Image (cartoon, rainbow, N blue to C red; front, side, top):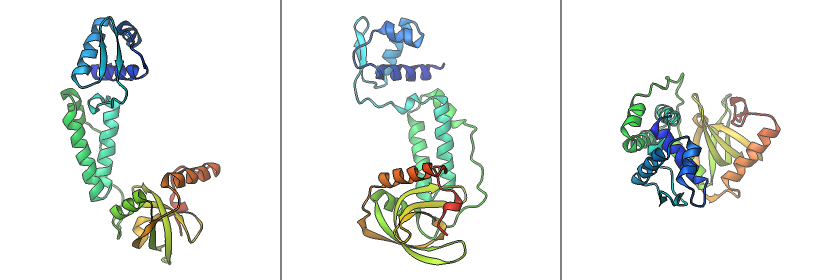
Length: 240
């Protein structure tokens, strides 16, 4: 176990205790010597962890302390790098820029050894088979989901048939070959999924839809679990 991983584990152990716990108890739980435990406590305090106490008295971590990003483990860093690279390569300009900015902020606060791991990560994202072409800005769709606003859309299905819909957008799903807007459709009185590259026009209405997006997502998941279907929409569930 690396020192960074040991410090992370120590923080997780301290979070379980609401009252001061002795250094020896912590050392035994972590499988380290009491001297190592004291050094680790001092290192975490120097890095900003709100740990109160002293040798012979016991230690407790103040409620509300947030785990600093410098404590990411190797696997967590791999997951972050791969995820951020996927977003930067696959998504629109706004999300791509956000992913690269977030990765830079994480890199800036990592200790040198973990910074090297991040910079030298060999987890890469392959080129997509086909990039979707969208007439509508994904920013507008994401804004409608966040604001829980109704959208009036013009949609063309795979056969070229157009329809005008009023929908309640509650999620946006990213596939390699398409982006899918998950909605409650007033025309169908049911859940429907719309490929964003088939949306020809969008008008955001002022009124919010009558349910919270979290409620719609829970209802959608419940229906799909009952039907023994995947938790994410497949292409064959996209509205025709």
